[in-house]
Amino acid sequence: YLRVSVTDRCNLRCRYCMPEEGVEWVPHSAILSYEQIVRLVGVAAQLGVEKVRLTGGEPLVRKGLAGLVREIKHIHGIRTVCLTTNGLLLADQLPALLEAGLDGVNLSLDTLDKAQFAALTRRDGLAQAMAGLEAALAAPGLTVKVNCVPSGENDGQLVPLAALAKDRDLTVRFIELMPIGLGSSLTRRTEQEVLARLEEAFGPAIPCPQATLSGPSRNVTFRG
Image (cartoon, rainbow, N blue to C red):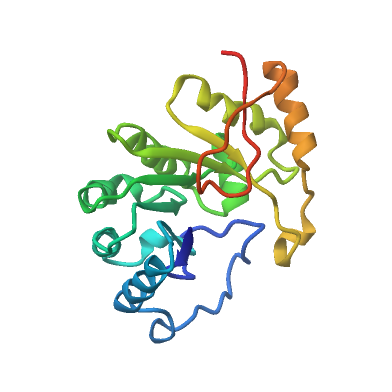
């Protein structure tokens, strides 16, 4: 399982990730070209890598990403290509990504509240993110996951976000707020604290099997 960051640039300014302004971007000449990425993934495939996840920054701000997906899918031994995105540009680009062979999308979403989304990301983008999520859910065969970072500022949103998995074909994941950089100034929520909130809302957690190459998660479901 190989994660490839295709850019450091992003169209959001999430408070736990980067300052609102003054970010010094890596020059385009200093990041891997698509040709170099394809070459490195080919080497990794020869060493046993089967799954590739494209990340950023926000990977969809880099032009021609669907072409990269297509090239990687053609590499012998690569079975799965997935994308982690904030979803703002996903609805427009998803048709080309699907045609190129994209297998899955992880959409980063910390709240369903419009005002809170703007406060956390410093951008008014919830409508675009939700449009991206709806487009992904409507795509046949596409694996869809929602990533939420519990930060103490979105406590009231953990249950509504988890509830997305009740009626929709998706998985909701609560991932650690890394205590580095800007994230070190925010309140962290432990796995136990998040699980307690979910059990209060949905009842006892039921352990469920972990999918192959799914990372270090502990997976549960709830009755209904």
